[in-house]
Structure formats: C-alpha cells, structure tokens
Image (cartoon, rainbow, N blue to C red; front, side, top):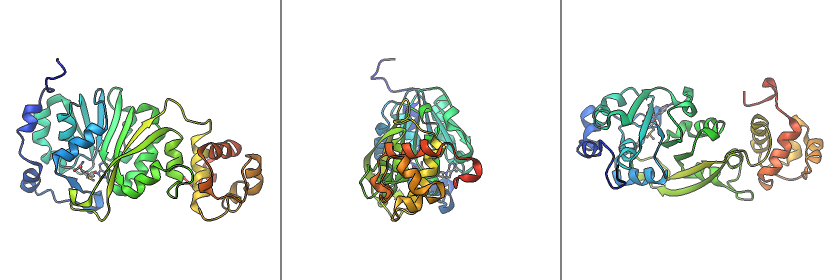
Length: 291
Ligand code: SAM
C-alpha cells in the first residue's frame, strides 16, 4: 500500500458519531472509582497518538473508555490496537468503532493490573494510554519489570508524577520512580494537558510522558534489590541514609558501597543506588517491604 493511502477502515471511523454524542446516548457517566476522565477532542488525542512514534506491530491501550484515544491511534495508522478495559460499559460505546475498525481493533474486558501486557500481540509492542491516575504508577512499575518487551510507553500522568518519572539526580522531584525508570529507560515529558481538556475536569494538569526502554539496564543489579533499597531510602527522604537504611545495614553498607553515610537519597545517582542493591543482594520475601 502506498504511504499516502490511509489504512483500511479510516473512512468508516471518521464517519462515526462524535464521542460526546455516543457517551450521551449510552449514558456512560464517568466513574471516579475507575479514574475516568475522558478526552473528547480528537485533535488532542491524535497529538498523543503521534507522540508514540511508529504504530506498526501491536499498540496496547489501557482504558479506552469511550474510545477517544483509540480512534486517534487507528486514524494515525496503528496496525493493530488491543484495548484493555475494566469498565464493561465501554463494550457498548465502542461497538461502532469495533465494527468500523474490523480486525485492526480488539477489545479485552479485563483488569490491566492482572493482565500481562508484555505478552500481548506481536512485537514491536508499545503501550499508549491515558491512565487511570489511581493505578498509574503501579502499572508503570509493573511494566518496567518487563521493559524490554516494549518498544515504547507513551502515557498520561498527573504532571507532578510525570516530573518524578523524568527527574534527574539533584532535582527536587528525583526519587524512587525516577530511579526505577531511569535504570531501564530514557524518559521525557512530551507536553502538558490542562484540566479543562477532560470530562470531568481533574483538579491538576496532566503530562504525556514518552518512555523508551533500553536493551539492557543502565547498571548491573537486581531489580528487586533496587526496588527494596530505593523504597527504604526515599521512604524517609529527609533523613540521612545511614538512618533510613539501618534495617539493611546502615553505615556499614553505605561505606562498603563507597557512599557518604550522612548523605541524603536525592544526592545519589542511579549508579550509586545500583551499588547499594548489589551489596544487599536479592532480598528474600519476608525482608522486602514490597511484598
Ligand atoms: N482513554 C480514555 C480517554 O482518554 O478518554 C479514558 C481514559 S480514563 C483516564 C481511564 C480509563 O481506564 C477508564 O476508561 C477506566 O474505566 C479504565 N480503567 C480503570 N481502571 C482500569 C483497570 N484496572 N484496567 C483497565 N482499565 C481500567
């Protein structure tokens, strides 16, 4: 197919009723418990879709809701979209899009927290999502554990969370999320979205973050150990490391890793946290506060 020709199904997608019409007709009122803040502006959702870059292989969307971003992904040429949604009402609202898109779109009614997205569809595989804020960081940390399965993750977070994900050592937002992301990936904020772009409007500004996993972690260490040590260090970020890391060896551990015991966690870089992780080895189940 020539590059200029739109992918099959786009004319049928463009002819669909507007999202607002559909949501009104189906009475799909947003549910707070599911973190539902919908985007109806197709120019905006198409901008998010373009931010993902290439859309060949499999594009996985978590929480299509009424389908604003799903439509955008298909219109921007996504070869195959697999949409995972917990709210069963979406099936009715998405019915016309599912039939217009044919086999380019699959809807899976499931809880994304319990779904191994990293095994879905064919590579190259990416996630593009306007995430429910209440589970956004839990999902990100889960996916980072399988980072090499993804070509990219293009995700919407609250701006404050996006800043923590992309922060560098020394930044006030630098913390556990920055380390767990930066260890495995490059991450950047693409653009912000104001509250009034959503229905209903959230209280805060949102940001779209583009995450590109590396072929291998930046520094050698065990991921569970890194999660463990960063959780302890940043659990009490104002305290000196020798106090916050006391349960796993405190001053002696820090000295072995060549780190100032009087330092604070935001002063260390990712390499230093990996040295600490290598020193403690792999925590057993009972030891780790993550369990
Ligand atoms: N993508 C739509 C948009 O941009 O308008 C909706 C985004 S809304 C912020 C989040 C969506 O995630 C909702 O449709 C919600 O039902 C869905 N959701 C919430 N928790 C979920 C879960 N555990 N698994 C899958 N989807 C979930």
